[in-house]
Image 1 (tube, rainbow, N blue to C red):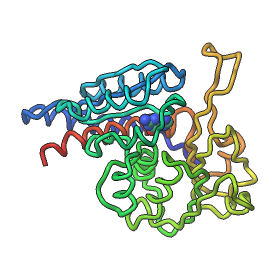
Image 2 (image 1 turned 45 degrees about the vertical axis):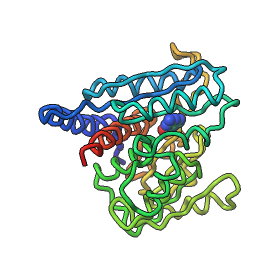
Image 3 (image 1 turned 60 degrees about the vertical axis):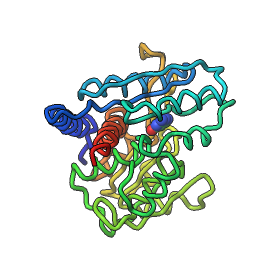
Image 4 (image 1 turned 45 degrees about the horizontal axis):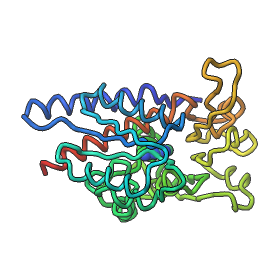
Length: 292
Ligand code: GUN
């Protein structure tokens, strides 16, 4: 069993981006600039956004964090995003999800200009992804693809089972894995809460992507020998032994599943780190596109 190490791969991606930024500046081009919008003070969202901003700085990007009150109206948020759309210095815009209940997430995602949609959630980005055209790939699926690539994991002709059908992970990774290019060319089965015989389907999988958000859902009796297991879960569960009061749990019962796998991602230290690395790649691309 080999660990797919998010620390090593994300570091390598970040070094690559850092080098590109240095070159860019030498050529007199602008500094890539990510604007992150955080509405309210959800603990997990705070942590993710802080990490995104810190990583931007590490690779030489400029970053702006816009904090808005939990009670902000949808119109006020739209105005804030339109300002970023019109700001020539801002290359990428990220609105951290979830948003408070008075705000329609779909409306907000649609407002972000597709050229600045570094999360890849806009219908224009998703449409291009489905057609196999160059676009911003949502950060988590993109991070998974970068990881498969880094470890040269064979995907052609393999059966990939994706558990979860969210717009952020399940749906886009299923499209990417079925593309006619590497990493791709898989036969993909998408499973979800209404799937019958989930265990039997998982047992046929060469590659499993667990992205359903239920801690330790995937057990060893659902995984065949030598499967590749990608764990996208990052649920906070109460843990009195931790200083923070919680532990981060993946969707895979790592202790019992990992001995059966050829490759597996740990949580933490796996896909989560790759998500940020992929966001940096997308932000650099958004900036680079201005010179095309
Ligand atoms: N919430 C959970 N994952 C994501 C993500 O990739 N991007 C944004 N903006 N919000 C999220």
